[in-house]
Figure 1 (cartoon, rainbow, N blue to C red):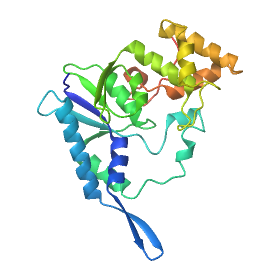
Figure 2: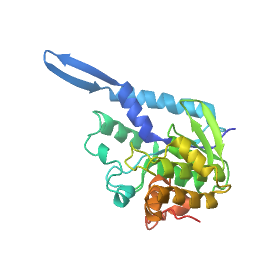
Figure 3: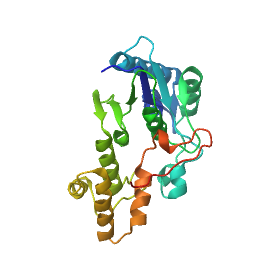
Amino acid sequence: MKFTTLLIDADVLLHRAVAKATTRVKFDEVESWEVDVRQAGGWIRQELSRYKARLAGTTHPKMILALGDRAANFRKELCPTYKANRTSFPKPPGFLALEGKLRAHAKVVSAPRLEGDDILGILATQPREEGSAVIVSIDKDLLQVPGWNYNPDKDELQEVTPEAGAMRHLTQTLTGDRVDGYPGCPGVGPVKAAKILAGAEEPPDAWHVVVEAYEKAGQTEEQALLQARLAWVLRADDYDKRTKEIKLWTPE
């Protein structure tokens, strides 16, 4: 399968590029880290060329790089603990300089209060007059977005159906993401989540078993809904580009 549009997770690209171009420098008792921004930029160009060779169906595909808003995040408005553990750490040396170069030389898309995942989800699900698009990311959360997904680390290309994407979202609602700061349903991991969702044949029915699991854990449907909204990656219908309004996830 070949594509005319590549939707690329640029947050991951930037962090990896900086890491690869970082050198430890020690002089007597002083230790520091130096980043070769030119080297980091060269690595990004190599990666983009690799994606193009693997996925593009045209000589000049549209390549869109998604970056999250660093100033605000609508999920933090819903839940103060969301990614709270990351706010105290500054960006690594060279990160902002490399981001500036990327914005100057590539098609980069951001939006107020949205994460890079949301940008990718919105772009991947918006109507297209011709051609097809693929999300390029190692982030497993994006496997809830219907459409094509490519993991460059695994060289794995797969098509996500709406049903599979919906069930993956509900799985994440149950398990939560402790790295991102939302816990999910107490006592539920991936294995137990699969057993819970096995009792529902379709995603609309699955919401009822998710709520039942939360209630059995001593929580409420409102708490389950908050976790579901934190786990949900936005789609084209969830965001008004003109007003910047966000429609939060609601069970069908």
